[in-house]
Length: 398
Image (cartoon, rainbow, N blue to C red; front, side, top):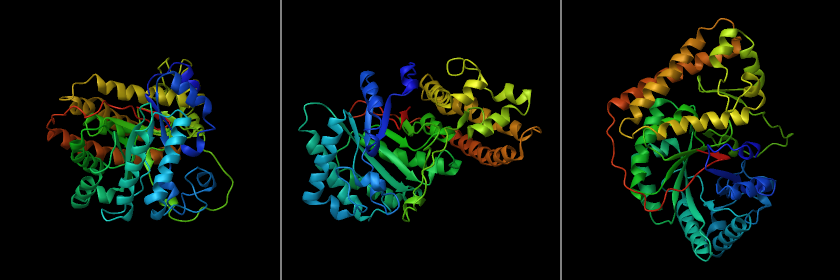
């Protein structure tokens, strides 16, 4: 909210979870004033799992005291929930809705047909509105299903029956820590989806992996939280939640040179380790950090949003035909080299050194895979979308 009020324009949409709509009332009002897309997450993915469902989701108009089952979205029950979702979205002034889909474990998952029908129910409700509200299809799959060509094509064929203005991909076990080999498979899968002619967004993906997807033209946008939610994992949804005290992790500090997020105390310890470290990895951008490292650690939200936005903006000015090679040379190789240099530092803590060494192993392999992909890259003609590109976001959107 503060970042938006200060004029930061590096995001063009905000996603708000349905159970948090009232808490973020001021953010919704400010978003509407600035003409930024306001996107409702109906939270049906979590609500349909024994561990994802909770008391706050149960209180939603379409919620239940137990986790959702397929029968709750079929026929009259589904129509009723579609109406509740649209009424909820309109009242809170959302102009885009992440449709009520569910995580698919295979092409034969019983949720698939129910999801397609629910998307139709929601679209029917939207067509009755005097204003335009776009409907997004959140396609959630395990990475192994996305990589199974037979299953993935069967799912694509099935969802062609559903109405949607954009597709957001939530791929389980994929995110900012994905290997180069997984990223290559993700890029290939996105080529299959381009036949729909609608915007594609990589949801819960950030970092070097997310910007690589943009550079190679796999997707038109990435969506994630503020220094969080850069992976889509559902391990915690598979077993009942345990009663415990609510604990919120402080916003981590982003080090663009290393493509790393550190806890505030870790970042402070790193910068105090030596003048060399402070000079090399401290933020020098006065737009987000006029007081250098002090602002970088004390105001990590503004620093993160601005730096990630600049990474995305830099791609816009590169012609698509040379974008992969330029991104490889100017970003991936630089991060790889900077991580190698950080791994050789003597003054840093053993904890940080261990993190960097692990990161070095991942990024060096990622660099080799992306280099090979660039060598074999052929520019694909991108057809104009059937509908105008819609803005996308998660907490903030790129």
